[in-house]
Length: 135
Image (tube, rainbow, N blue to C red; front, side, top):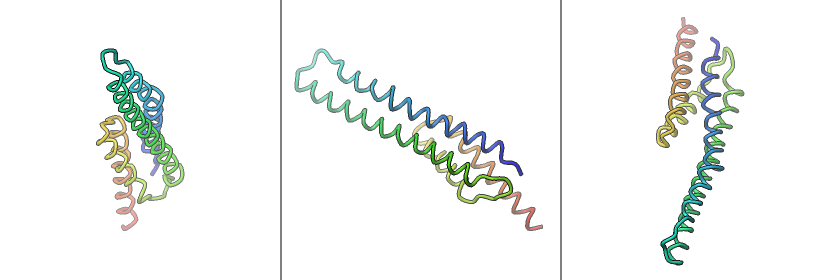
């Protein structure tokens, strides 16, 4: 059975995760840092504390962006390596479902739909291939 639909869904989801990670690192992180520094009516001590806090939040956003990029590249690697014609992958659909759960908790709805869809389709195809091989 061809895996073209699943591969397309996974490549779109991985591309989106990489793009989302880059946006988080290069746009959202500096935006947080800039907004934290743009305070006019605070004392010097309060400004220093707010700058420290916004820097920490910016660092967390950058780390999250790096994790998204890593997830995207790992998923592309797993898809290219293990998702081939006629092979019944066992752990790859589970990885897609884990990525979907991570996307759920981070409220990345697009990745959630794409990863869960690909994972469920692959698991259903695996089940049908197993039933055909048993008969």
